Length: 135
Image (cartoon, rainbow, N blue to C red; front, side):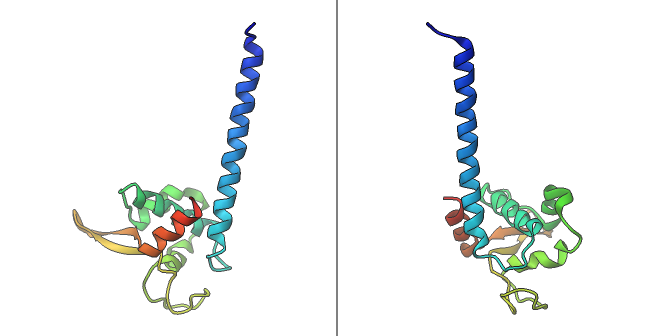
């Protein structure tokens, strides 16, 4: 005989199991990607890169300002100067392991619809790092 309270409890456990599995996948992915990051990379910087990557993979790249606003209050003021660790351009400061160059995971491209905007896009290397971490 069907017992609704037992069914409800087993669905709840199943959802809890799914949440645990999802958390394990997320932790594994974060561990993989953190192994390739500079030692001093902050959580805000990682959140910024992951948000930029997800937007680009969804074919809706954003500007730095749009991404900074989306990441929200976790972003420190220094993110504006230190997010460049992910860019493919030469760096002016030597704060990170990559000394002269960024990691090369993001590039800035002029928005074809508005030449004043610079969109952050994944490079091939950035796409590979992201997909390897989250596959």
